[in-house]
Length: 307
Image (cartoon, rainbow, N blue to C red; front, side, top):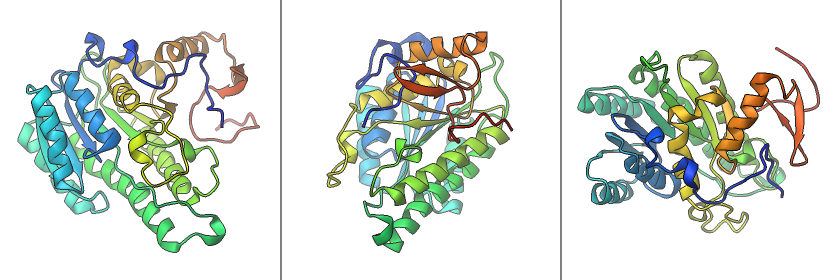
């Protein structure tokens, strides 16, 4: 499958423009909360935020040993960043609310950036043979769990931009299967599509926050035992891209978008500048042989309807 792309340069590993050590990407004085922080993309993202000098990072997940391992890596390499471990299941809203309150109380401040990374892949099956528990578990964790996370967050995130105009960040780790069909992935796909639309509505309903759906690529740690997908990125790419997305450098995208980590951020900026200048007209432009709609959201191709 050829990846859809609006830019000419696509990445498979981190690169200079998203280096967490760049002053423009600094997370100094910022409080971060990451769900699914015990392994894989969540762990790597926590390390990237620590590398960018985050003040506090809350590590949420179901398994305490994995969270402790992530915290140990941060404390060893980036001792200036304080870690906070919270074992919790995102499907349990009251427990999640207690965690968010405990974190903001302990740091005596708000959450500046949420990374909603927790989720499950229920396995592969055709619709005709789909086990009921595969669909229900996927919807419960990936959709209800995301809704719970956003509800728990809302009282603890700045409701208005700061004095520089910077808006607090809500970044949902989505998936390409939310908008690309992949045989056998229906239980995962419908849940990730629903979660992505949920996040789009959250962006619409909270205009003073900056909200993003982010496809992280496929990393090796997520493929154990699946045999269906091939890794297409190193985990450093989604980890560092997320730090870039949480910085003021990403503001040109606007809130409520769905973006792939593969896409070069400098070329994305150039593309959006062209949209704003009118050089790229409403509808689509052919770039790299593929049509690119300016909205970068889940929608319907093939018509020019406007809401």
